[in-house]
Amino acid sequence: MALKILSYEELYGWTMDRIVAQIGRSNNCTFCGVFRRQALDRGAKQLGVDSIATGHNADDIAETVLMNILRGDTARLRRCTDIKTGGGDDTIPRVKPLKYSYEKEIVMYAHYKKLVYFSTECVFAPNAYRGHARAFLKDLEKVRPSVIMDIIHSGEQLRFKDSVKKPVRGVCARCGFVSSQQPCKACVLLEGLNRGLPKLGIGKKSKGDRMIANQDREIALRERANLVKNDF
Image (cartoon, rainbow, N blue to C red; front, side):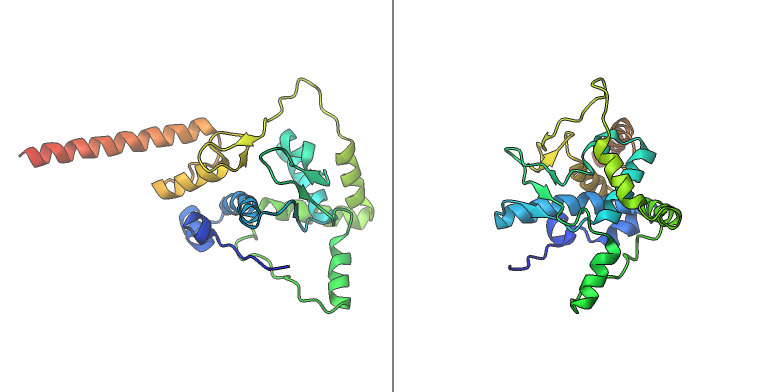
């Protein structure tokens, strides 16, 4: 299969180095995660594929279950253990063929088969929230070796009340890619970077709306001041 390489600079006009220079190392993983997930959809659309197979393994999924529980993110908690997601009229389905494979088993297989694999940690990831979940999971695994599979099976069996609000997946009006909000998170984050407001997409939408309104007000005042100055 042909290897298609995409870059954030090509897709969004920003490199990760420039993004970190703007936002710092506290929320940089939010940008990378959102842009990376959409980049998969963009690349898949370019290639005209039928499905996207991701490399998520058992360790990844158990970590994600813990993270979503700790954040109270019921929307993601519903689907994070699904082996297949998406697949509607406007979305490309994603599958996780390595869902029940331990990370160490994959590494051992690659080593035994003498395969070249990527093992270097991201230089911007030491403060990532996932790192804390991973450390906690490894500590639990020392006490209960089956904890990774236990957490995955628990996530698969979770049920929610009908009263719990479910996000409706649709298509972003700006970029045309799958989203459960308008505009999508990728577009909001990108708008913040281009406006010089890197924290625009961090936190509640109402906070971002106030930031945009304040900036627009300041721009209007400056333009008005320039018009008055030019009149003299």
